[in-house]
Image 1 (cartoon, rainbow, N blue to C red):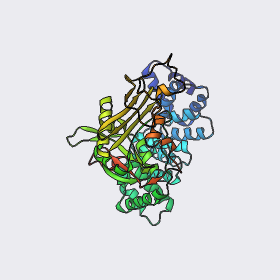
Image 2 (cartoon, rainbow, N blue to C red):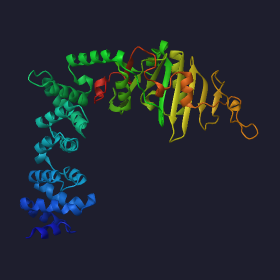
Image 3 (tube, rainbow, N blue to C red):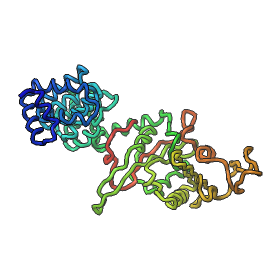
Length: 424
């Protein structure tokens, strides 16, 4: 039967006819695969690749190699190659590992995607992982997920590679990064953990702090530098470790994790970053729902609780898309001043000495405008500058004292539960 006829059968509505055609085409792989790939020039939709997918999947390794060759010659579009490379089975595990080792970022990502999908414990895959992290640039797609998936199996081999005198410095460096990517700092042995801790302490005094500016959204707490220790008890934070500002910001940018609790039920755990003292204040960043709470009463209670432990506490929340602009200032367990955009009321408490009242604003026209006597003009973006520290203005001119801390929102978890590397 001619190839063209079999390819036509792939478009049939008869499932048995389609299956028979795919089997016959697989038997003629050497001539079929090139013909199939040439036909992709006219394909514009992912759904139209399905007949090709069925044949390539059945043919296996020879089709994998032919697809890579055609992709390299630009005979197959990048999006088509990505879709088709995601369909092969365990017979192509070695080819996925070889592709993962490709120095090209995009091609390597397809290899790691295949290894991850097939859950392949591959020595070649481990080496590709080490090489990717050793290059120290962009990490290919799914490489970190593969490191996490294989963390228990790879850990002893990666630790051994770290201590192999015959391994190059870049290989040992890549093994270190791969260990951390899969299991966090706790995946390292005692020698490497001590080295990382020394490196952090060395970098801390020379770091110029930079915090995320609340351009579109953001939230943070501020407490006095002199009494900040109370924040750990107030927010029920655990296992604190010294950290650079860069790593602390990166850590609290990541996702929370779900783990089994002491009673067997799942619980969510996150990381909180307490900055070094910045112009006399320490700021707290982390998962909003775990540290502050989702309901309004929770937020107020949290700010008042932190102020009871630290003497003072301030809370700032911005979300331009949602129209939120909130700030609170609390002292000794009580909120003394509060602004909530579009709240009812918007302003509560007596104005603070630095505030400009709405009625005193040059643009206020008493004939047409209305404002309660205690209404101010400062939203969170400007209030933070007067009350404590504007995160967006932290930089070379900021007075820095001490170091930051990375802490967890639950006890008995360990930092190793959070996989992935942090930029120290």
